[in-house]
Structure formats: C-alpha cells, structure tokens
Image (cartoon, rainbow, N blue to C red):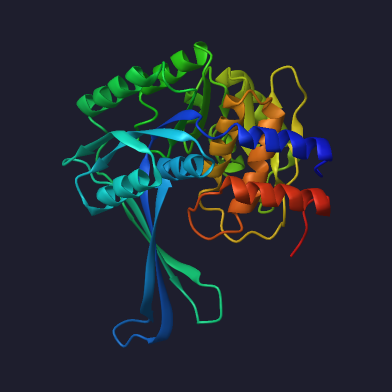
Length: 350
C-alpha cells in the first residue's frame, strides 16, 4: 500500500504527538544477549565448531523491548514486571533506567530467576553471522500470589495516570493473571488505550482496544498446530481473525504475517490487508511484535484511527526486521522509512 502525500502528512502529525505520552507496560521482562564468534576449527573433544569469541551485546527483550521502542519514539514509560536478584535482572533495570524509563514498578525477587536468552552467532569476518545456538534461562515457577498482588497494586495506582497500556505476555504467567487482565479491562472501560500482545493466551485478553497476534499465535489459540509450509491460506486467516475479534470482544485484532504484511479486523469493517512496508527480504524478526504494539499504542493514544495506527506500526515493523537483534525503532527512522515509501511507492525485493 503506497503512501500518499496525505498519508505522509497524517503520519508526521502522529509522530509529533508521541513525545510525552504516558504509557504503562506490564509483562515479561527478558534479558537478550548475543555472543558473536569466528569459527576457527573443529573440536577434538566432540564434532562441534569452535568459535573464537569476538564480542557480546545486550538488549532488553520481551516487555522490556516494548519499553525500549516506546522510549525511542518519545514516550514517557512506566515499567511493571518482575526480575530476579541476579545479573540479568540488574542489566535490564539499569538499561531501561538509563534510557529514561520509570522502573519503580519492577519487583526484584530473590526467589525468581530473570528470564534470559543467550544467542550464539558465528561467521567469518566478511559474512553475516548466523545463529547457531540459543540458551534460555527461565524461572522454575509461576509468580506467587504475593508477587502478583504487589504488581497489581502498582498497576492500580497508575490507572489514572497513564494514557495507554501495553500488556506483553511471553508465557511466564505475569501479564495473564486474572487480576492483571481485570485491571486492563478496567483501564479500557475508562477510555484508556489498551493493547495486548500474547504468545500463548491471546483469547484471555478480552474487552480491550487491540490485540496483536501473529499468524502462528492466532492459529494456536484455536488449536491449529499445523499449517502449510508457505503459510496458511488466506481464507483460514480471515476465518480465525474474525472469530478472535468476536471472542475477544475487543475493538480490533491486528494479525501480523511476516513478509505477507498484516490484516486488520475491526468491528463494523471488512478485514483490511496491509502489505509489507519496505523490502520483502528480512534480516531478523526478533522483537518485531514489540515494535508493532509500541507504535500502535502510541498512535491510538494520540487519537489515531485503528487503520492509521496499524499502517504506522507496519512501517515500524518494516524498519525493525532489517536490523539484527531486539533493537528499537526511533521516530527518525520511521520518518526516513515513510519518505522512502512515498518515493518508491511500495515494498521492494533486495
């Protein structure tokens, strides 16, 4: 969908309204690290490649990546979640605090292990590094009743202060607690924008402004585990998207489909397809969903219509997937991408 001069003017207007918007993010905070190495030889101990360590990078992931994107777009962000009393948890807090987030809503628990994902990438000096292995560190229990009650109390205290909420659920049972979901429904009923992105339990987020499953998450919500290699048929996406719109009782459902773009399901409207923005060759989809919810939540907080918010978030996702790692997309990058789309008229193939 090419951008017109009118689109460009509208999106510029939305971006200028982003700075200072107050957004609360509740969800699973993840420490993402990338370890890069140069393959030098095969090990004599086992049939594996030995990598010579080059460097490491740290990025806030999960709900913390949503926070990073909101901050990069100019929002004032309040973070609510939990980390362990460990090094990964300390990294998340310090990184978000340095970026300007309010981290007073993060609980540190000595009985909780911070969610951490370490990716090992290898490649020669003049080639792109390829991921060879991922090591996940996860808590061995759900949040306790006392921990959830403490977080719910912090959310309750902020309901009248923030303009929009993002619930970011990566499957660790914090954002999907009955108390948190009820608070999000309360915020929505009070006229606040509430956007939910859930890995496994999207159907439980009912009565909100927008839910943003990807295609796989949409199908899994209805027990569909196997889809064609080249992606699901259009009719199946349409059927399940409309079904979720009715079941979730939300204003809209935005289904993200990788290099096939998005489909917006909105009450009282026919489903609308949004083609991929930019190139159809993708570098890394990690964190693209976080970028989508951040841009959409801010646009909606600025009184954007759902379609305009979806299109803007689609452009933001197009920028993100060309960058390796869970890295945020800034307002400046969005402006450059929009102007490029206006000149080129649509997605291209590298």
